[in-house]
Amino acid sequence: MRSASIKKRKSAPVSVHHQRIVVRHDFPVVFTWHLFSPCNPALFDALNRGDGPRPRRCLVVLDKGVAAAFPELSAQIRAYFADKSKLVRLVRAPLAIAGGEAVKQSTAAVRRILDALRAGNICRHSFCIAVGGGAFLDAAGLAAALFHRGVRLVRVPTTALAQCDSGVGVKNAINYAGAKNLLGTFAPPWAVLNDADFLDSLPLPLLLNGIAEAVKVAAIKDAAFFRAIERAAPKIRRRDLPAIRRILRRCALLHLDHIATSGDPYELGTARPLDYGHWAAHKLESMSHHHLSHGHAVAVGIALDALYAARAGLLPQKQAHRLVDVLRACGLPVYAPELAQTDRRGRLAILAGLEEFRAHLGGELTLTLPAPLGSRIEIHSVDSSLVSTCIAQLARRGQPLNLESQSQDSRFKG
Ligand SMILES: NC(=O)c1ccc[n+]([C@@H]2O[C@H](COP(=O)([O-])OP(=O)(O)OC[C@H]3O[C@@H](n4cnc5c(N)ncnc54)[C@H](O)[C@@H]3O)[C@@H](O)[C@H]2O)c1
Ligand SMILES: [Zn+2]
Image 1 (spheres, rainbow, N blue to C red):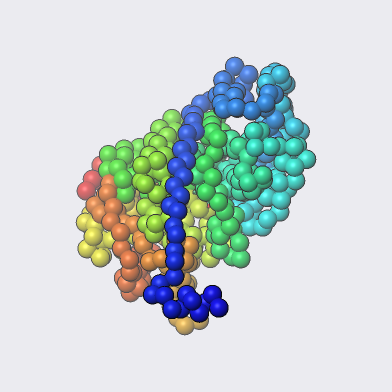
Image 2 (spheres, rainbow, N blue to C red):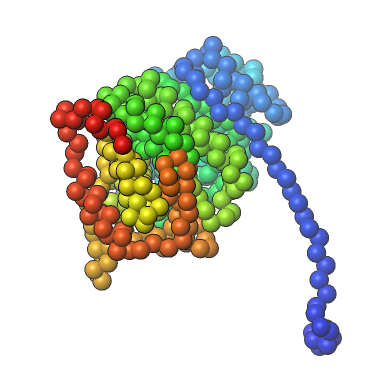
């Protein structure tokens, strides 16, 4: 009866109320040392921001890799909270869980953290404090975002990559069904506390993971920063921590600026500039069964896309070579054997990463390329024969760099 009367009219009645919700997020990103020393105010100030009952209830979850590198850390954290017990309280001893990519490969760690949040009666006015590398923070961030639809998360990033990129952003995720970051949420943290002491224990390859993200963001956003990395490359390769810290801090600020000002913090559009080089990087990570770290995979991915941009006529060739050279000069790889793997039909297996990337973003394929260095361009299709040529070129250039045989000047000019 009703559908018959609707059919008679030209169009069905529609009444639309336009709902607008504006949500502002403010959170401190602190650069400090000795975070858990009783005289450092950073953590205390972060926990006392906003309302909520005192003492603040806190669950600390700790990346086991960090706990192993700093055996006194758990006791230090307990002593820190004992010192201020009227205002902040630990609901249990820090919960240590193995970190690294394995923590994202199943739901086990997320569930353990959820159980601990429940057992500790953590509410939306209390805190989950996650101390660890990027993978650990991603998993802990997902648990914190799910529990009570989101409890306050304080991130304490402990790797170079986490301090300059993943830890300062607004995302979390775990891998699922073989796909990188398939399950996750956008959830800005309550605070980010970057303690430079944590970098002391990192071997050079883990420090370089952060440098790869710095080269990435410099190449598409900041030519002066790119030149600064070129100048710092010999120091970076020698593991000069003050030089590395300076680069990581500037990288973090560029990421923060992009998230705050790009107009798309929750990545609703199809462009994702901070994921320059990541279509190949994510695919390489899974093809290598995560033997290749995210940062090293990013180095290979941005080298590949820089050569592609040059061959597509978007980036001067000299600049593409500078990008490849700076990665190598820092000690990063620009080639991985997985790049040359073919599928059953003889097609380069890496190319499947393009469709996976498109599906992850939704909508039209959109890749960001540097053009020229320090600024960017977006493309929507990829010529697979050009990719193949670039891979062959990288295979030749990817040989270890014999630094001794070259003067610094000859390496960095052009
Ligand atoms: N959420 C985001 O926006 C975002 C952005 C970029 C990357 N990521 C993710 O970050 C992850 C990579 O993070 P990562 O590079 O920090 O590596 P990681 O978290 O995998 O850590 C690497 C290893 O270092 C150990 N470790 C951590 N801190 C240490 C320390 N101070 N001393 C000694 N060992 C330490 C860990 O236990 C682990 O074994 C990837 O899963 C990637 O997808 C997320
Ligand atoms: Zn990345």
